Length: 376
Image (cartoon, rainbow, N blue to C red):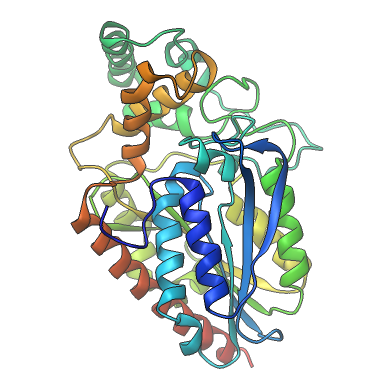
């Protein structure tokens, strides 16, 4: 690993982030997890720093590590922006609220999910109401939760999934696995049965920091999509809505148009329940502001790797429930999970990821300034 901005572990990434913040003469606040620890027994935390004027009317809320092991690229982007002193070039009246390691357990344990096996981007539902239904998941759960994995078992699983996809369509399979389900804590796409520690901590961070912000741009760095080094803008706002128009101000409509995103994705995007963006948008609205943006994906898989994400999810769940995650015999499973979301030995990918993320920071901040000024 040659790039100084990328790390091999969560502990390394966190240390680099906190050191860079300190060197920039800013202060990071640590929200330490009260129970969960890293593989080495060290603390896990969400680290938060504010750049820019305290009374800024426009704020970029920037997250990394929502999906745990996807945090390596997001952390590197945040670190690169700090090291480049991006805060010195902030447009007038604009600030950045940066949150590092939103799901520190997953980041540290090379897992996509939290300490409770919760997909944090499915956890933002109203738990006082009946949970959303996932009408297809039950048909796939037993296939996706084997007690052991070996080449024969994996071949059988992929064969059974392929048969179902032929019968029912690829979209149903992807939808069942990624929509979010709220009944099987040991399954894939589990959205939880209560707000997670990460959700509650991030809620407190938003309430404490964004009460004075009129406009909030939202970037949540993710990886794992097809197209190595390619950028996919996932705007969860409905086309034609004010929220969609505001996201277009930040990222240009050509980038967020559903037809383009689906062509990059390789199929119709599955449905989503409990998405963090909508939860944050509602929190900001309760504070009197308006939020726009969404997830930005940095591609890590070949377009031809149609089963890569499913295989990584299968291994991730197996490592959590059926074996010892860091046992020597599981090294190849752990490597496959990690490398679905991060290319640690690909320097060209790292360079492209950082170059594109720096451009996105610059364009988003300028778009946020224009958005604020348009309503003054």
